[in-house]
Length: 379
Image (cartoon, rainbow, N blue to C red):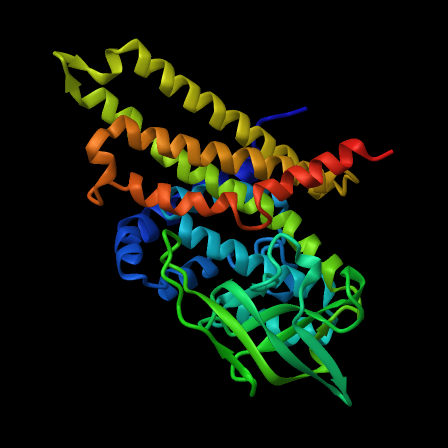
């Protein structure tokens, strides 16, 4: 059991940290305030390999491990959790094409996704199907060489901006076995989008409904066989949960570092905040919880890399723990800053807003508990 990063992993970490500091951190507040999708910065990241971290090299990806990806996402999110989280979603959708698509599909979509000339979105959630994803109702009816789609996907990151939408649709009976995976390209007749949602956080990425009205999609755009869509969606989410957990680590670490610096500088009652034992203990607990979360995330990533049969449970545990801890640490850091933590001159409040949604997406933390408890109680 070796907890030391390899030389390659340290190099990936340094690369991601340098990019985050130079290309993301100076602009993160502006992106948040103006709801700006930072296309140029994202494409610069893609040039470093961040658009296809675990996509095969022969299709333009970097072909690294899930553990490597967790290290990279922690660094990117230390500058801007919102933007880092979109990169995670783009990676997840691209990997699903790489892992479950055929050679023609990979050649058709991956090259432009790997440079982020094109952007990708993952479409599972619906207005009436959130945590109960298997109850989704978007219908895809076979008509010759096409499927005709009708329905709506909700809260889609990249909605209206992305070029490629990896969608879970119902081609068969009720339940998970009736779900298939289709790629729908922007500009397809019958594809439209809802209004851009106004959100608490994650403002550097657009979120909108994706609407299908008699939308014709070629059968050739189906990823995998009919009925395999739910399995594909869940496989994507295992990695997505590790990534979003790692994004919570990075945002929380930035807040912890800011709180430490503030405590060393700020004086009240004739002494530094750092000299009050009660505050020292709070900082110590924040650092301890964050380190425990990091270990869980890295262990889950290694389990997924190794094909461990319990990897799904490990990913659920890591996602539940790390996203809860990440938000708690960020919120504690805001409290330690007092009124300064609440104003936009300091980055704490933005990170608190960004990290809150991590407890909801990629499966709510309540659903993570369902996954864990089912495994524990299986006879």
